Length: 359
Image 1 (cartoon, helix red, strand yellow):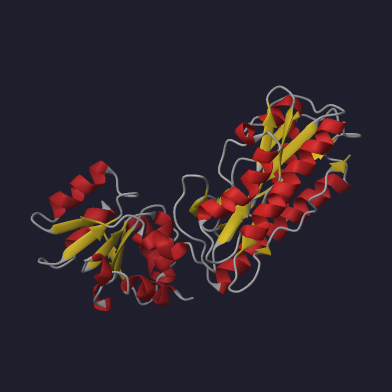
Image 2 (cartoon, rainbow, N blue to C red; image 1 turned 135 degrees about the vertical axis):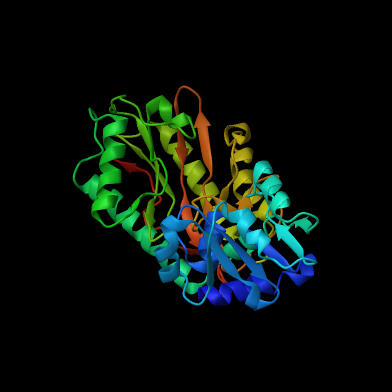
């Protein structure tokens, strides 16, 4: 979908929200709607298409003109108040309270004294949750690149006793870059032995040892889009408890993937996986939500969890990532990124095997 078409899709939501125009301040929302990739910007999307504009500062004057053909570009700073000031008096202007800071809102109020301002949380972000074909293609490419990097690491013996967590994580990040990634999608989690029981452990100088479970949670950033995958390995033959734990998480992940269909409630998808783990007596050892949307941000709506709200839509790209973590012993997480399609099961975009690999 083109950027003008995305603006038109948002435009259709504006009157129903009781607005005449929307001030867009989240940089990823701005990029999604305009194509602009600079570090400072705000946009106005108006019910009247003639009122659309992008505001940025002088550093990005040329870039904005190149990236946003056909869109009025205002060069001014600070961008949000300057953009808001261009909305005609008497109109109701919405703003995203999730992205506009308290100080930013105060500056906007000062720029448009007496103007009707109304909260419109998540209105622009709502469109980002449903990906078009081009976005899915970019996310799939990021997933394939990350898969290739991890396979190469394993084939080259890069995951072995004696290497440190930090060394392996850096090796994997470097392989992704060499394959063309802009960089890792987030700080790679490489957790060995008891550290694998920490859901978001940061790699350290700890050496990998024979018998360790090794959890690798990683992704690639490519052309602004992201991937997210987790696999858990065993260095050497696995102990019975390690095999059982991995089999349990694998079964939960399969149940979650099967439940991820258009129209399902996000709590029901979470419950499909969580119930498997709870029935095995490990419910308290699965302390996080089942998954999240992936796109221009590596974590974005929709959210899968016990307290999340809403339903799954065709076009969502979502992770399924159950985990069980045994303090002081080790943990297992298995994660895939999937594309939800109409009338059928979600399509995996990550392609690594799910079975426990003993290295």
